[in-house]
Length: 229
Ligand code: ADP
Ligand code: ADP
Image (cartoon, rainbow, N blue to C red):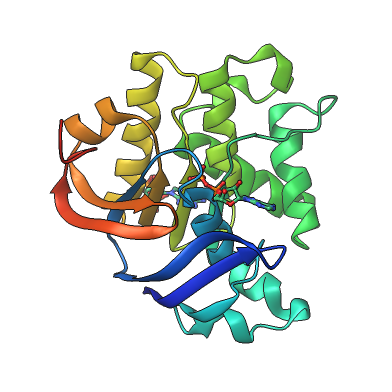
């Protein structure tokens, strides 16, 4: 369960990115976070895996209160969360499988056999096993996004967060990427997607949380991208 209670976030003590945000997401829900650029969508995602700290309020992720987590314990929170950021950073000279194994090593999984098993499992989950020997630069934008999603799944997290996962994709690739998220959601994963993609939100309907200037202005089941479209 994810619960924001009166959460505000100020950057540098003055830029109000989020203001008095409260909502709850139950395990297994699928939620779109919409709103114009600068509304606070990315900040909302970053608070959840403690890439940024909230300023006031309370944020519960599963059994953990995020604002109480000490830096040395952050890894416990992050094991519960897969996150796909807007920029997918890969190590350019490592192939796809090696990139995923590398992130496993960073999480303390050093046994090559375990790395191999886990890497193959997530590549299978996103349908990319055939591309595992390619370098990141040899893939299309959509294929790289799938690898970023595979990497986010590596811990089999109960929660998957993604920031604008269909940005810069053609319509067909965008739908393929969304199908992956729906598949994981059907498997019981909580999925939250920050997006500008009104076509996706309007055609593949789910709960919509709308942010405007850091505030929640709408929380609607089976919502559309915008109330005036
Ligand atoms: P969105 O993802 O909806 O575009 P963001 O969460 O990125 O919104 O940004 C919300 C507000 O916070 C914006 O005014 C943005 O300029 C500001 N902001 C975001 N990140 C930082 C940062 N690291 N330092 C200062 N201000 C930031
Ligand atoms: P299947 O073999 O049918 O894919 P799994 O038990 O491997 O079943 O996966 C259950 C669900 O979790 C599926 O929706 C699958 O896409 C997704 N999944 C598969 N591998 C992983 C992983 N390593 N981490 C997170 N989710 C995964």
